[in-house]
Image 1 (cartoon, rainbow, N blue to C red):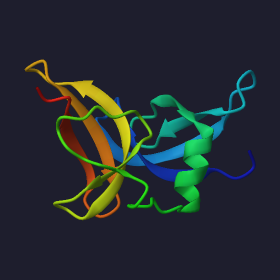
Image 2: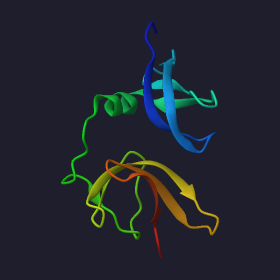
Image 3: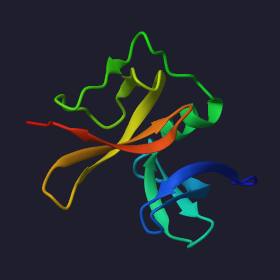
Image 4: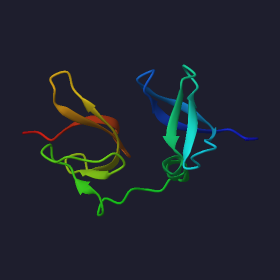
Length: 121
């Protein structure tokens, strides 16, 4: 790549949202790309299509997004709408909390990155 591309992404090694440099696509799988954290230089494999959508600034549609409730289970990449914040976001990853509960990390347009409970019994 003659020109490097940067985007704001969550670095699992730093545990922070940092500036990430898009390094290049995988030769065997063209829909995957390598991304490097400019802070810790940790390399991460990402979905290239999602990276291009994030860079192009395609806004999420609140009408098509699933309304968030703690009782539901969500998929990575799914758009959700949080009615209390009046904000729409995209599920970045799933985590298990120290208490054994399930949680999702969501990147909201206005609120930024938040951790929300899912599959509450």
